[in-house]
Amino acid sequence: MPKSAMVKISPKEYKKDDLIRIDSVIMHPMETGLMKDKESGKYIAAEHITSVEVFYGDDKITTMEVSGSVSANPFISFYVKATKSAPLKIVWKDNKGDVTEKVVDIKV
Amino acid sequence: MDRRTFLKTAAVTTAGISLSGVVYGGFAAELIDNPSPKKSYTDALKEITQDKSVKDSDKVKLVAPEIAENGAVVPITVEVELPVEQVKAIHVLTEKNHNARTMSIYFTPANGKAYLSTRVRLAETMNVVAVAELADGSFIKAQKLVKVTVGGCG
Image (tube, rainbow over all chains, first blue to last red; front, side):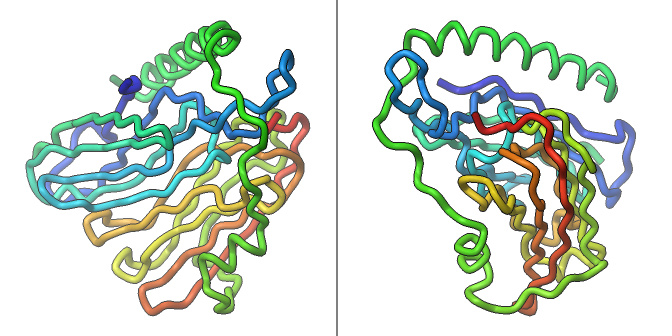
């Protein structure tokens, strides 16, 4: 089931070739696979984001590898150079095969 | 949406999700016998650098708190003060975590700037290490000791 995610561009006003910061948050439990279930004494299975890919228009511009050492509901922020008007798509994948996508439009 | 509203919404949603997570987790969490495999700092560094040397450099700016009250959410920011064309990736390592290889980000010139900001878990007081992989195949790093009052990995 896709998770809920938010993506924000800052600053709000930018021109062509400006550097813009992309802030992203996805609501994900990020289970590490190390937490014990109190009743059964067994471990709660790992469930965390493993990869994040960023597409700007047709180009894949950034990839990330993520482990369970990243906090729950991962907040990730990075920069993009606004060279063209095109959709910016962020794709989060987790180790259970869950895929979440979020698109924001960059307009220059 | 300005920064304030964004963060507020994120915080509120986070709180809501974590509460529902507790309730939901009681019924449906998948249980397993063995914990996730361990990856030590040495192994993680070796995996990244393939045994190449890593030099300390002031070109890598790592911002992390001196003291983190809550190890579950420790904000860190890494910026490499070199043209993004010269920076292939930033790897974030957490020295004493069960899995020390925390996060990696691979850049292209379209990023404009080699920058990453995120929040990590720290199980105890430890060094956070930012390793930058440069386009010429060399590695530079910066590290910072973060004191943790309450650990974040259960």
